[in-house]
Each structure stands twice: as C-alpha cells, then as structure tokens.
Image (cartoon, rainbow, N blue to C red):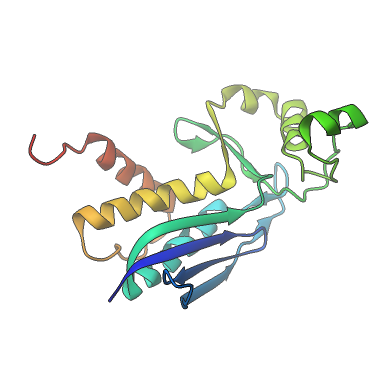
Length: 196
C-alpha cells in the first residue's frame, strides 16, 4: 500500500473526477462521473448529493490504493451554497443559469478585477438574483459556502475519521450522504482527545 497520496478533486459543472497521484506526480487512479444539472424549480441547480456520493466513491477507491496525505479541490468559484441549520436553504444554482447579469461599470472592473460575465458566472449576479427572486430564503441563510468548500469539508471530515477509527472508508451509503456527513461531524465535535 502506498503512502503520501494526493487526491485531486476536480469539481466541474457537468462532470467531476478524483485523481490520486503519488508525490512524484504519477497517476495511480482516476475516477470520473457525471455531475448532473437539474432543471429546477426554483432555478437550474447542481445535484450536490450526487456529486458528494461520486466524490466519496472516488476517495474510497483512492483509499484502497494507499494513504491520502493531501486533498486538493479544484473548481470554478462561482457557485455558492446558502445554509441554515446545516441544510441547504436553496439548491446550489447552476452558475451557467440564464439569469440577468449585474450591470458593471468600467470603474467596478478596476475595483474588483472581476470581468462582467454572462448569466451566473459572477457570484454577485447569482446573489442578486436570489435576493430579488427568493428574499425569504436568503434572509434565513446563516452561512454562505463556495461550492468547493461545501463538497470538500464533509469529505475531509470523513478522511479524519478514517484515520482515527478504521483502516478503510465505510461502505457506500444507501442515499442520504448529507446525513452521513452530519452524523460524522457530530462525532468529531464531541470527540474527547485521547489521554483526557
């Protein structure tokens, strides 16, 4: 079994992959899957649960190849998850959704260094759309997480538990991946360090 593997999580809009590399850059494993976009309601959105299940499967396969030392998420930064009480307030909007882009002046470009892009490719355009079309849901949101953090945080917690509790990742969940992660998050929070 190899040690020191790097797991690269490539989180795309329509596909995702987990690539396991050695420290020298040799590809040990590549797991690819589609990442479907759902038409709505309330708007076109990314299937976060399906993405989590596929990433988990890729990490499970990686764990069979060796010890993961580093996880590197790679994604477009224009997708945001709005959360309240550990649940999504709204689905994660497809950042290529045909929504109105915010008008931008030349001065704003120099301030933000963010070019005006079509649809939801600017995060501010997505948030503006949500504020106009779904103000109650936005008002309930307690946290806003960029999509890479939403997908990677539970997987990193799972790797932490794997290292402490068992030699292999648990078997594939039969559905509700988010419940599995929430339960494991509670375990991490209440865990008493050894020797105390």
